[in-house]
Length: 388
Length: 210
Image (cartoon, rainbow over all chains, first blue to last red; front, side, top):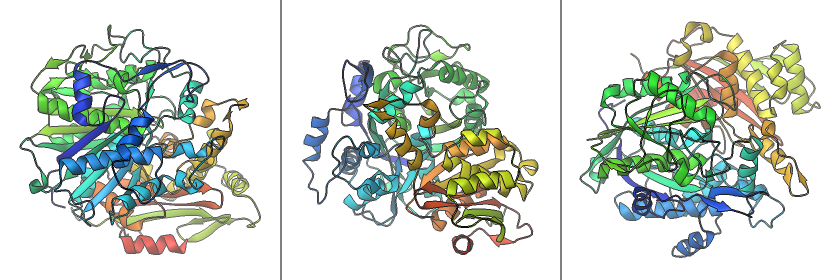
């Protein structure tokens, strides 16, 4: 294995209620505009709910700009739009080549197809995650079998690590890591049954937080090990990453934060970077009581409690398989612009350890950005992005 | 350190048959339903883990297979819990439970339950194995149309060769309609008694013979 090959970021895109490009999203975030809205009545829930929903008319009108030979689902349309955007940004990435692999991060894929109360245009086979991934790779004429990562709420950040590791095997030159999940009655009712959905817009790490806001989004990061595939001077690499399990409970995080701590420690060790060199943490911050508390313990144990940290869940909602990817992309944009995004709706710290939550958008030099996430089944992940 | 890794034990459940390291260890008539077979296998092996009954079928299958696999070796004693990775794939994700959960959110019959909803994620089975054995290492769940020996061998070898794990519990667990099968195996740096190299070819051979 050639350890000298670095994993560079070659292009990225975010599609969310805040915009259809990384730049559009980042502009809104800098102004601290949230994409989470109140829905008195919707197909999502029998009761009123706060959620971040992408306008279907906008998806369809954008999608019409591209010629298609077959029908695609809402989720697949988002993925195709997002990948088309990164290919436009960086034409050096040959998606039809053997050296380009597609990795799809999703928890529920085309889960909307299971709802038999609405007429379905698609065969039920399309609810298989690999079938959705195949439809996407077929659209782009990608010759390789797509890889699907489905690992609950850490899927996105984990898929970036999987992409980096696949580049290290030298079978590929580019990996297109795309994460997507759509908001459905299925997902909303499930989190409501857990009493995990907030009665307001989520308030990450805040003393009055009472649960998550859900959202839908799609994000794409193109990874390459070939420097000549970059079309910008600023270089950011995926330096290291690790996952773990806290082996405690399938639907609740560890009370001690030991699992997330393990993922962070392994990542810093692999990167050969000290805690004191981390400039910024893009946290998970779902705004549930237990998750945010657990994060504060793990971050403190890793001696990162003074590092500026935010959560974007109050802007995008929790977007499940997309979360780790779109939040990482915002981190990349923060590195490029040396601008930290404040945590919307955060006012007063409500976790037991004094972690450093960013309140307002601020300017700061960022060389090392750590992204963390945790999810159902007790899984945790950390990824380190570094400026070259 | 050598880049070579080895398959040191394996276990499969398919067609009402439990195979451990290639020999049929327990079987029943193929008439019995998959879920009944799992329950009788659980009793036969006296696994004594009451949480088993709370799990969905996919996790039950994964738990029994991993329990029997780990009984054949000393992995959980020989390695630090953070050094053991669990990387499993399937083709159906959690569709069995997804379909069940969908029936609970019908407008006329609305009773969503968190105990069902939590199993609408395939990686919950990684958590169940981790909790059962206290394993805290790398955790990844993949979905492919069919068992992909090329990808799995390549990804797991890269974990071990880059010191991201010292051993790995890995393989395939499917449970939906007529697709019910598991094939789990352990990968280590040492050849062990079996001396089977962890290559795409060897893995394909083993999987096909189950």
